Length: 177
Image 1 (tube, rainbow, N blue to C red):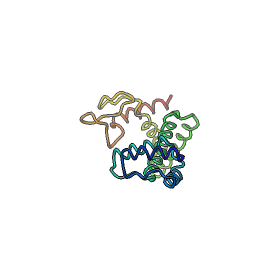
Image 2: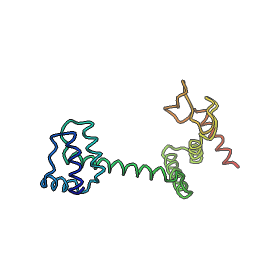
Image 3: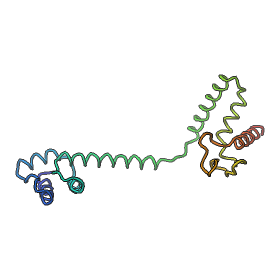
Image 4: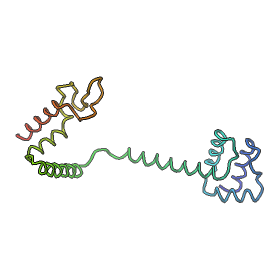
C-alpha cells in the first residue's frame, strides 16, 4: 500500500472507530512502510473483518496478519486444486512397481512364516481383488464393501471370509488358465 491508500484506509476506519490515528505525515509514512506489500483491497477487507468481530482499534499488525492468512488460504486452495486436477490413475510402470513391491513383501512374509510361496501370492492376489466378486454372506455387490449388522461397513476386516474365499477361488482359477 502507498501513502494515499493508507490515508483512504485510515479515513474509512476512523468512520467506525474514533481512536484510529489521524492520517498525519508521520502516521502515513509508518503505516505505508509496514503495509507496503499488502494490497489495498485486502487491507480494506481486513478492516471490515476486524470491526465485525473486535471492538479494539485496528493496528497494522492486524492487517498484516489478515494478509498472511489470505495468502496461506490461497496457496492451500491452489495446492488442493492441483491435487484434484492430477489424474488419479497410475500408469502401467507405477502399477508394475507397486505389484512387484507387494510380491517381494509377500514372499518375505511367507518365508518368515514358513508358508508355501505360491499359496501366499495367490492369497495376496485374492485379498487385492476381493472387491471384484460379490459377497455370498451379506449380498454386497462387486465394488461395494461388505456390511455388518445395521448396514455399516465392516471395521475389523476388509470383507467377510466367504467373499475372500470366493476371491481366492477366482484367483486360483485364473492362475490355472
